[in-house]
Length: 272
Ligand SMILES: Nc1ncnc2c1ncn2[C@@H]1O[C@H](COP(=O)(O)OP(=O)(O)O)[C@@H](O)[C@H]1O
Ligand SMILES: [Mg+2]
Figure 1 (cartoon, rainbow, N blue to C red):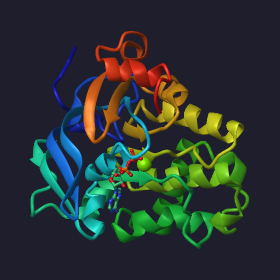
Figure 2: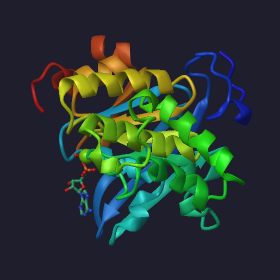
Figure 3: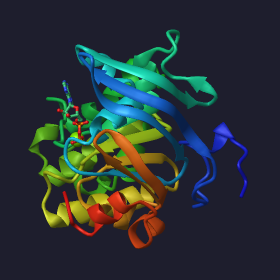
């Protein structure tokens, strides 16, 4: 296995479908406290590039809290404190000289409920590249909008109505719009927190197919309460319980031969 890190291969890089090459993010002893009360305990977890890592575990076990560490979204929550180190490209993202706004363009996020801006479909995508100064002219912006929508599998459905509000789309389309918006600023990592939980089964299947396609280029971390979904879309699975990372490994291994009793009990439905 080639473990050399080549930034040229991230995000915009080659799409050769090679999974699991190198840790894109390396978390060491990450803990999170809300007003002094600990919610995540000493989690150490490598997240591999060009693959999907699923975070699973019962409600309240700290999945979303941990996910938010990866782009410093916990900074925006009053009383939240994160300790430990999270390395990306050899740099600790918790260092004071890291700009969280810039970080969040490199580590994009898609939420449970699709949250398009109250703007046109076009402007939902164009907003990020504009404020981050990624484009010089309208032509370039048009190209990014089209490419992002294509990658999110939405272009054919919206190309003739780019001026309409993002909110005029169906729930599943809105979620793909939000994924396109995240992609538009050329992220390296995409975080998804239960991205299908407000969608019907058909829209869910669409998003799952899309995630499988996107992993050829991106590092994806997805929180899901559905073990079936974790089994379908991820290559690596991390099982959380009561704020602790109990076990992580290849998804096949976690679902067929978990090492820990607590993992087995959870995946066999003995608690949830
Ligand atoms: N903003 C917050 N303020 C205080 N406590 C929180 C906040 N968000 C989450 N928690 C607490 O942290 C723990 C983990 O929550 P969360 O990360 O949302 O779990 P999960 O995503 O696995 O359901 C829970 O006990 C929850 O009540
Ligand atoms: Mg959650």
